[in-house]
Each structure stands twice: as structure tokens, then as C-alpha cells.
Image (cartoon, rainbow, N blue to C red; front, side, top):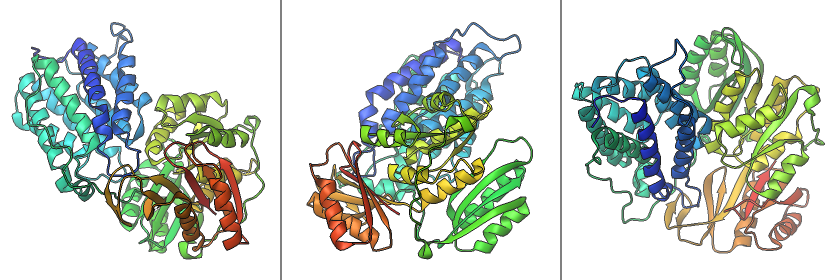
Length: 542
């Protein structure tokens, strides 16, 4: 039993927590509200904590003269390793939890019960700050509950505070379906919250020498799970507003709050300047005037662009221009599938395999040798990792902009409009506009029974998702592929891009191309072998 959390205990906590996550990795991966086989929270948490443990393998006895305490040094190594190895949103949030905890207790001479409570409170603050739009019923709710329980314990006894935090975290995890309808419909608890509970149980085991004792949550109900709409922005907003803004960080923080109240799909990315910097502001709204006026109040907006989605028709794709590193620019693209990787490499991009860590993306950025780099993540779960890599690159005097692509077809559209003759900032905006103008679809087979927004589906059914939402359910792969292309072209389009997956039957893209040629004679079709797993066909319409 331990009275305080020392450096050796931190190392044991990381090791025991990692072992627990590995044991439950498959279980957490299955806590997925989608019927498609893409749940990877457990895997991401394991990879994130593996990186943290590797960082802890450093010499903990080597401390700077003015450095933190030994336990603080260990916690900061753990947090830094987690940050560089963070995979997906869950990994990024976990790295921030560890950073907040380390910041709160690193300088304390001892870490007992009250220090543990203070650390969990700061971890909660860091976790909420890491998310643009915090949602209850997620990992955030679980870490907040743990902090509150440790504070209410009001004791210096480390064992008592740790048990209180772990017990309340488990109860909060059980309540997540009540807070988040998507979890209730799917019959699951939050996957990230489940992983964090395992880490708290590991802490209890380290400080008490006994396994945590509390009721395990019911991870899945007997009723079939459901799907939810992915976070791709609501069609309730009719306009896209984007502008560059010269402003101070404090003013931008207020601007974020104002724009978040006006719409969604809010992205505000800065150049890292300590005082007045340049920011790229993007939001979907109904009140265009209010969005621009908020920018005027915050600073000096310029290069203002407003697009009404109902009028949006993509222009013909220009001849690709491949910038060289000689002009100080480069592109880093995340790709899953050998064919997709070859396409990006042919466009002059540096390719990183799918589901990278922050450190892997940062290594790729540095390897380009360029001073200005654009990153295309091609997956919502990789966007947070890309943003962290961009922040780390700033410390290396590399300017990185992340274009939030959600599909490889959007990245192809973005790369096609690069122009080394433009200012880097203007080029990034042009790439973001091209990616946003490219609607994307994914066709896959359902992995389980579910109730989707398009109706019920059964294992083996063919699902067609448009911009992340299930639109069609079919029994025949080719029929569903042609139907989703027809639906997308019904909203306009001049160019269709088809990427055949690793499991696509021979001739699938040829058959879809022939259908488009007959039904839409003025539409151009490009088809390539993509090699991506899980999805026999990816579709882009511009």
C-alpha cells in the first residue's frame, strides 16, 4: 500500500493501466454506435498509452536542477509520450487528461488524497478544453465525476481518494447512455469513458495492492444497436462563411464562443503567434452578417468568402500542379490502402499510413524539409492528431495548416488545386474550399443489426453512407453503388471519382462507370484501385 504517488508508482500505474487496456481492447472497440466495422477506441487508447510507457522508459533519475519532483518528471514524461503517440479523439483527450494531472501535481512535494483530487480536477479542465464542443455522456463526464468524488472524499488518504474516484467514474460510465441518446439507442456505454475507468482501476490497484471493487457497467443491452449521424455538420445551416482574421488570441477565444452559438462546423486555426496573429475562420451559419460582424469585433477580417450551399456547383478540376519542396511547401496525407497511397504520392505528397500517432505525423512533417506544410487527415478521428502535430511543428519553426478532409476523395480534390504561385495561406483556403465542395460516399457491409436513419439493417446488408450518414440500405453491392451515385449526382456534379476497395469484386468500378456514362452522359468519371479495407467503394462527386 502507498501513502503517496511517487515516480516508481507512476511507472507501475502506466504499466498496469496498459495491461488492462490490452485485455479489454476488443471489448472497447466493440462499443461502437456504427454498424460498420470502424470502432477502434480501444486500439487507439492502447497505442496512446504504449507511447506513454515508452517515454517512461527514459532515465527518470536525470532531472534538471530547477526541474519538477521525481514523480512530476515521471508524470510529464507519461503525458508527453501520450501526446506524441495519441491516436484518434480518445487518445488525444487522454493525453490532455494526463497533461492536466501532471501540471497540477508536478511541483507538489507529495501526492496524497487531496493532491490526487486537485490533479483530477485539472485533468477535467484540460479534457474539456481539448474539445471544441464538449458533449456530456462521454469520457468528459466520466473524468469530471471522478474529480468530483475525489474532492468530496476530502481526505489526505491516497487510497480512499483513489477508490472514491474510481467508483464514481464507474457509476458515471453507467449513466452515459442516459446522457447521450446515441449510446442509449446502440445499447452501449461510452468507449473512451470505459477506457478511463480501467486506468483509474489500475491506479487503485497500484496504491492499495488490491483490485478495485465496484459494479461493472452493462456494456450492451439485448436490443439491437443503432447508428447515429457522424459529426459532419448539419443541413440546418445554409451558408458557409470563411475569412482570414488578424487578431489577438484572447479576442479569438471570444469569437469561437460567438460563432459556436451561431452555427456548426466551426474551425478556427491560427499561426501560433503569441500576440496578434493570422487566423483562418470557418463556420456554417444562417446569419451571415452576424458571423462577419463577430470577426470585425474580434480584429481585422479579410479575404471574406460566403457560399450558399444551394447554389454550390464545383468548377472543373484544374490540371494538377505539384509543388516542390524547393518553394518551401509540402503536403502530408494520411492514406489507408496501397492504391490510394500511390495516388497521393503521384501528386507529390508525403504519405503516412492510416491511424497515425502525433509523433508519426510530426516525423513526416519534419521529413519533408519544408517550412510550410499542409496536412490532410482524411478521417475525423485523425483530425485531432493532426492538429496536435501542427502545434508540435510550430515549436520547430514549421508552419502547418490542417485541411479537415474526411475522405481520400476530398484530399484528391484539395491536392488538385494547389498552386505554388499563391500565398501559402491562400493556397490552404483554396484546398479547403475544394475539399468542402467534394461530397463523399462510402459503401460497406453492415457488421451487425442496427436501426439507421435509413431504416433497419442486418449483418451483410450493403450500406451507402453519404457525408458520414447512412442514406441507402441494399442487398446487392452493384445496385447500391449505382443508386448512391445517382442520388449524389441528383444534387449536381461534373466529376465522379471512384476508389475500389481491397474487397471489391472484379469489375465493380467498370460497371459503375458504365452506369454513369449511360445515365449521366455529361459527367466525367475517374476510377482507381484504392485498396482501402472495409469499404468496397469510395465515391467523390465534385
